[in-house]
Image (spheres, chains in turn cyan, purple):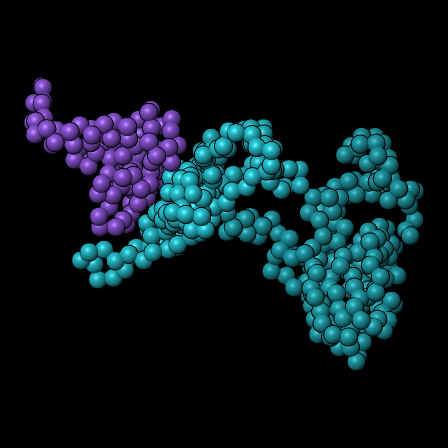
Length: 370
Length: 97
């Protein structure tokens, strides 16, 4: 380190901590090395670049791109260009290699498999020992101020490095022999502006698109409101819907007993009370055909035949039973002047084996097929 | 509601249907009857509404000429008067109005 009255880095940090932004010299006062150094450090661009630009490569630069992985030779190429890391700009004038880079003290055999390639940027003090021009041989003939140089090295590490001053350049895989570029490129404000303009168009065009989108959103909102209104109108409120569902559905989703009746599922196609003539004699029976439906389509019928009367009002000492039978019958019908049978006549045939006439009620419901 | 009376050529009621509901093509449940048999369609009045179908069949017969139901006792009485007129050779009284 140079011969300073105060470490420049410490002096700068102390000034920043106190909110100082400039140094003002006064007449008749001596000029101190630490104050001159602070002037330069406060006016430097590193802090602005680090905090407001970030790390990356300027637009159009191949700076520090890693290519040409050569696993057998434990080497790869580093392309020339510039790269900003921690506010410091590393510059590589000519392409070089991992092994051939200027600062190669940390070069090692490439790890097996995947590993990370970092650019580490750091400052190096240059005195007259490294640069004889700093001896001021043309006038005072000795070294006065020394210089600080932004230096760099490319490192390979299987483990991630999160320390300041390090930028991930690429991920290499010696097994697959691949290189994946991980640099942030295009770190130029004008290029960013161009990219944004290309993506969104001019401000006016963007405004038009947003206006169009606003109109679309308004139309969608209007449609959604109409749909919501229609749904609410159809089903009622959520509470009303829940009430209706609770009326017919049990907690496990099954239909409550008594919810579904034949009348709710099917249409009445026939309902009539019919008299059935008495049987001509004991052991004989009469048959009464009753037409319940006339159609040529398949019919899924639910039929009930219920005895109505006569009901004997005299109380007997012994139980008494009486029976009648009924069955389906389908009659095909060919109307006059028709070439084909085009009607199915669905009938119920009631048989009465009793020697008295009876009345029965015949009801028929038809289930819709689809 | 309709009342359908299935009867023979003498007006004897064979079967009765009190139809509460039926399709257009099956209003008459006695769709096919014998040649000498007929079906009479009437509105179901309160009188017949109160009776079971078999009771209508038992208690009424059809006046074939007038095409209407008549109580069997009245029908028998008319038939007896007709027979008496034939025997006496008298003409039936003129209809009024």
